[in-house]
Image (cartoon, rainbow, N blue to C red; front, side, top):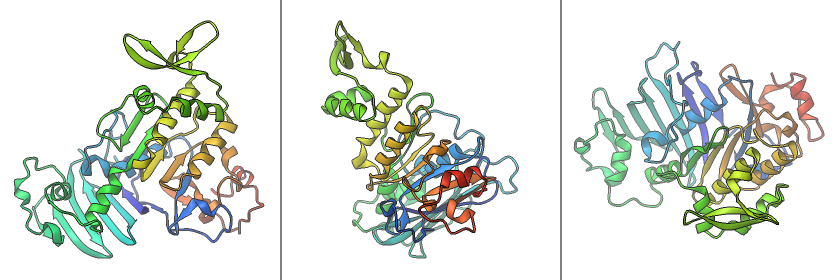
Length: 366
């Protein structure tokens, strides 16, 4: 799991931003949102232009150089370095809790997203360090002590990634293996425009083919029905290819041509949740942008019941701020370049009976 994330000089985050999942309070309710004494489910609020999408891009930055996973072409990494910063590098630090070990991976990049330095710590001890400017290399990873990094044909390639890919054997409890497996299981997605995503897989997959080829049509129909969307789904052929269809009394139609924007968003959500065996961490941006309040509540509960992965969701829907759904340490406000949980934004003792939405709208968590 991700225990802590720090970033500085990235886009609108000029000052150091710290997101600490270990700041768990002693609430006795909704304990399913906590795992390994870390926050496993987090819902973030913030004004427009506060940086919620930028936060997702910052957290997912690690996947851009440690994996070969897909990244949708979008604007999230334009103007990468903060325009007002003093330093000429963006600073990242990830603290992971994996297999009962604390693993810290930190690195810096320049304005072109090129690595400047990398460092890996295991239980506070440096086991790897590389400086791209002077080629200074410290390597104490037992399985990779003899690796020759001069053989990298691409000098901009992550040295840590090169070491991992060119070492024959990694024990299951190796810090580097644990790190790489987690990072390969990180996913960011949203459906504000189309199926935008980063991470998890190396190529973009057709959602229609995925559902049909994996015999998930009946499950998809049930999921939509549970969400209040009643469709009689079927398979139809178009240009010799099977596609998801909707059966009406007088004819059959292509599902993607008759489904609403909100239903398309549910289709995308169902697709990713059925890749769940691969997911360790998911950032779902503006998750309920096209949903009615009741549907937003259903989807939030659905995600909160999935303990298999750690999740961060962003929303503007204050109706979801409810102790029946989550708890104050699992709600956070991103504002003025800083992020804090509701628990840390008030001096009041919050109890289960408190109306969190009313408190927020009243400015209690400002």
